[in-house]
Image (cartoon, rainbow, N blue to C red; front, side, top):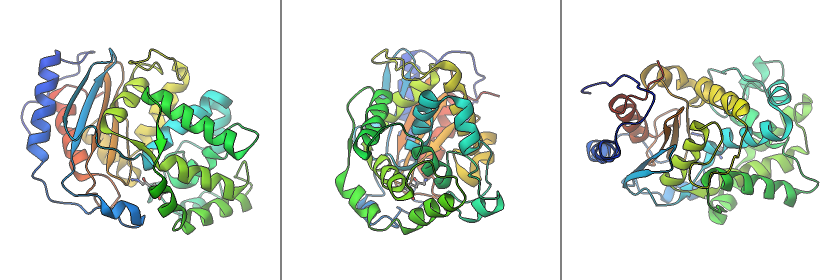
Length: 318
Ligand code: DON
């Protein structure tokens, strides 16, 4: 893997960052492992060749390589950001009591994890906890709640995001498992609005279209204690930001979260469209997009390039 750099408290000089981002792209572009997700039919059309990455510093500077501006659906990467918005609206204590913050050690859409935990969700990074989180979103109507979600995610990205209608329709027609999870939680008194409404809002938030560059800026916002480095808007209070990073470190890569933390040493979150966001607290965010996934649903090139950049840029927290 080459030289591993010890964390210094800041990113290296801009030219060095730009060179390493380009080097990561060149190094992992030829990788052929992994499968594009097809359980959401609209995602199956993605090319396995698409690969883009971007680093955003907390000063707002971005360094990109490859297809960093190609849109894709945010999917599960919406989970930490929606958890952040709900923590901001309701307080981190209430969010923790209602949702939980411990790892499941099980797949992202596990029903067994709910049963093993006496009907309580385990954390906001897996589907059960994420749908429960979305059920806490403030608003008097479905439209108001959706506006809260879309505006909030846009504030993290520093630009107006939109939902990909095709991905939404495709997942809405095939998300019986998530509907089942929401209704099971409802039966346990762990849904905080109508379960079908929560599932629909969750499906919408997962279909929001972003780029690797957007993910880098969203990550840099969490890296800077909740202040967007491009717009300078405070999206989240610093004490809540810390909680969000804690749950990402615990469960962001599902049952592989321990391996991820062991190798990369940073909070991260993956999505089935092939995105991964990683946060280097106090330094910046890294956004990667590459659709082929491993068995746990995490981008193969995304993990390799993140490990390379964590080592070469000296980002590992430990
Ligand atoms: O709920 C689902 O199945 C998708 N909307 C999101 C899953 C996902 O991104 C899992 N991550 N790697």
